[in-house]
Image 1: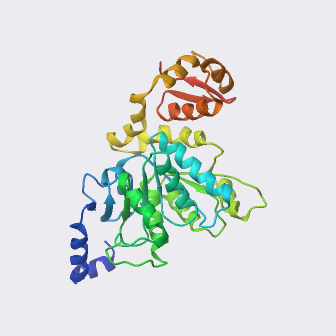
Image 2: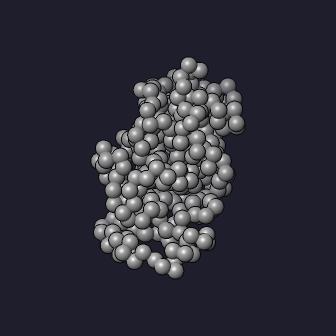
Image 3: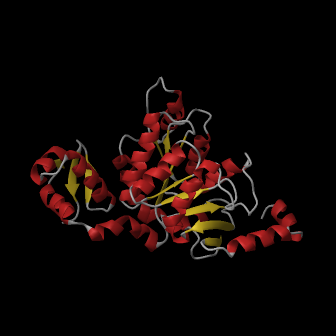
Length: 321
């Protein structure tokens, strides 16, 4: 432990401890110790993981496979919509969307996951007895209903600038990978991306117009080795295999396949239409009578669940009957 922590333990702030314990007595509040079986396994692997996690909501959501989505607080309308669309599409397939509850891209990611009926986690730069920014109070309550609000900061901690870069290591540490949507060169999102690389996580970035200053950070990440992302499938190609390898909990790694056990008739029909060789979306539309949009969405979920895979040429192959 660092000297500062040892010094504190010699003379604890007992008033602060009492505040924490009073908060813990309220419904929906949890305090996870590092050795707790509910503590997220990926976060335990990072350098100096927080010894305590304050959680409001569903602590089990922290053990699910997660993708972090981060970006600028002042996105363009297309950037906001892109974040919302990616979050919704990936959440539908079983990924939990993790972000920081900030204005802009963070909020769009949380909203997209919620709109699809998926799960999302907000990592806070304050303690959990307050919401920052205050305008996201309703969003925070919605997140906690099926996901969780998370902080390592003791009760009574205000919105201090130095705490937000600190919380970024938790955003990346909880997730299998980080997707950056619209980030300037000096964006705090690049801090999260660098932390993700240090933690051995995947980093994805969405490119854009060279005339848009809000994508220069994304382009810099791509030059440095981040995976260029154009569709959700680009992310799933990496995370589908990683989920079982990097997550040490069977319950978490199997969450990606949870929807697979509930495949309805349309999905079974689509699998049957794929046959035994590579096939394109247009041919599947013709065979199934579904729209191209519906087929593309269903293929994404089938990929996520390990029933199909994308191959070169924009084609798809069935992996399971």
